[in-house]
Image (cartoon, rainbow, N blue to C red; front, side, top):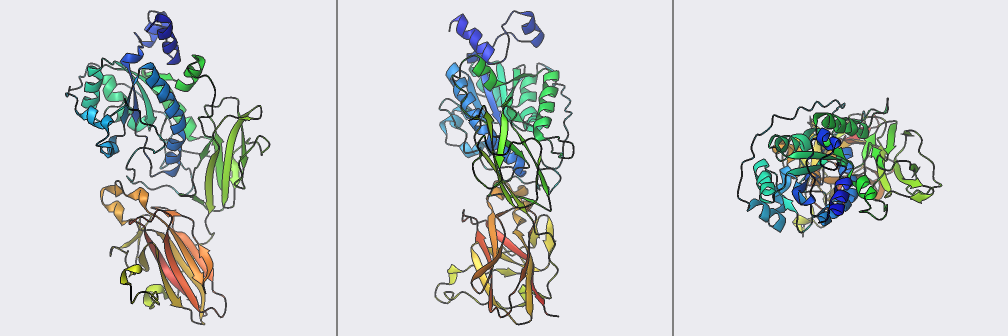
Length: 505
């Protein structure tokens, strides 16, 4: 490698040329790409906070392009998905890593003294229905591209051994969440800093776990910037990898690699529920000077679509799409979010509970007993308490999707009322580790074969959907349905809660 190429690479990584005063101030000696590794922390395929999960997915295109360039320069890429690293057992990238001769990471420096000042909250969705915690992730985001030369590891000693074997002394960190996992997990900034490694943070490819406050405009992007600055103050230099690769002409174009971000951020397979009104903030932190245009009818935005100038107030179920433009040219990947307004009122308790009635079985039950999974009365399908969003219910029925039961409608039945949600007994074992992300169901009510009401897709720990359905006079039959949301997963357990009929009296 010639000197001109080395200087170009150093510029591309946001560092400075060794031997200068700036280099001494930054504590840098060299940035040889063959002595540099990129460590990617916890880019999981799900998260208990839906906004956090979508922000991870939004980083994938930029991360793929940055890592492709870095590999071409000779940098080693190490994936550190901690909790789910063994999901990659059998991958050559994993087997090569665990075959390394172990070398205990030394403690050559004191712990890094970073003080994090960003605001924090229960989840990053803001003041609406707070996401409840679980450990449902079971792999990394499927959009991430794993290179043939990459490695998988989640142990400090193992990573240190891999670096030592390759003569690597400089680390660039990417991933989530910066103030937690990227900073403190095994193999992350804190232990590798202590082991004497030079540590950098990819400013454009990390995300902190903070909060959203629409009342004063504080977003997760603000929180991440605060954390990045805190680490910079503690001695971990920030690098905007994409920007510097463009400046160094290692990228020849500005192809769209970023999404416009929404806060909060639900999708059709995991909607964000709200009551009355929802305030949505749109941001594009790495598209300086771009204008954001959006649509609320599900159509793809153009430069002629409404211009985003302030947080949007949404009061109805909405598919919101957005894209960023410069001089009428789209410079982002089109983004989408889905927000669902909950029915305004909690349904009243029924006069007659479903579990006190006999349902009409499917016509095929006599010949094919397994074609209908019978619901359980007063308990979940698994025979456990009826639990949804941290609350246990004494009235209701547990289903496994897809299944349906039918009841005769008596003249005195005026309304069908219920709550409905995904059963969450699985959270009692290791908080749903590897499982909680997979349950998704849709609840429906049919009267005389016609759809009368339905929920959106329901996932674990979401606020129960509210049903209050008027029964037309003269109706004969009502079907109570729990169907899968397209995945047909064996864990699709749904609970109809406090379900039954309001009578004429």
